[in-house]
Length: 471
Image (cartoon, rainbow, N blue to C red; front, side, top):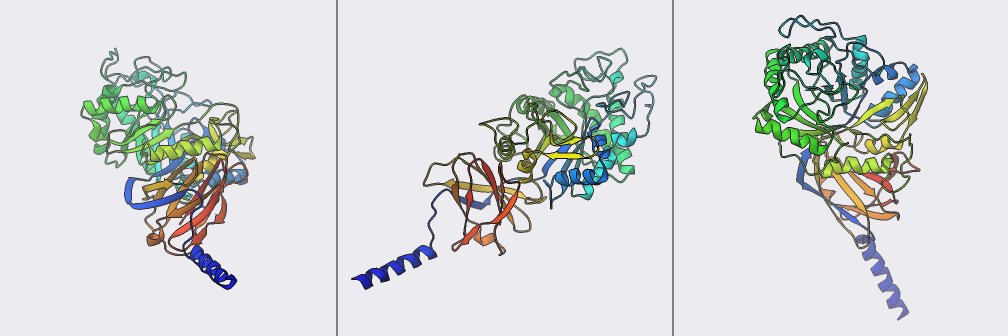
């Protein structure tokens, strides 16, 4: 009897080794279920934060740039958003216009000047970012020049003269504004920099004490009728982005208005921010969609997890980014500033004087969705999560064109979960399945999943953590 029991024991052990059983959540990849494409993640250094970066000493400058754009040591960002200036002067926190002085009339030649101070060092930053792998440059104007607007100033809202429901004694300034944008794009082209997308509004639902211009959907369409043919006439391939609403629903209103006016064909990229209303159901458009700005303003926070739902925690931003891709079907996600000399959480890196660079955990949340793991041309694919225990997982997966797959698993619960990944065997090229962990103690720490037979891999995902599988 003892011998038989021993033999049975050996057989059961062999069976268990050949067909291991999952002891926690099982994530199954569905590579045949395809969603939107992927453009990347990004940041801005508008309002002279490019100048702040430029003033760092060389070592700190390279460190900050690599943190943001390197796909080897940093977040691997692939999108840079620059600001098109509208200010008549270039004091700090202003973006000086290339047409700072009003012409004689709305039909006169604009008084162009060269890009002020290297476009507040955004030209220099564009070169640096492209050299580190950035694929897209997006140039956005917060406002037209004050003399083109109903209120006569670049600040406190106002409307572009010539659009619906405006009446300006100086006439219609739509063509002049379009001409200025064309010249700006040509200035960059002459320097060897292609601007892929250009916007003419920023948070047009708000009036702010800094550069701002208001517009509803019909009024945006009124300008698109002028800007679109102006770009074509100039031989520019730059596509128009619109409209950087302050929140998801504010942007939806403007997009709906543009569609109702029949000008949606002129828009190449739909853009929104995440402030006034959170990203939710996708926009009813076939256009690519980016969240082009979002941040938080509470006192400086370097932590991954402080308390449930704390707005500046790294974990909070990991969920924001993931849900934007998974729920709102965005193809790109941009935080506000990448690096800045600020006293709140508007940036991912804090710089001080000429040398100090401090990194927040929010940067590493972005890195999981950057080009270190997800390549240009990737497609988001389906995932299902099954479990034999209670868990709090959010999961996304992106299939790259080179056959690799990146899977992001966020554990919002308190307990460690043993996560089994399935469904990748037919697409795997061989080699170890690497994992990358970020939480309070780890910043993209590399490890290896335990690969099992039958197309499975198992890894531990601690509570309040983000772990990426790279297959």
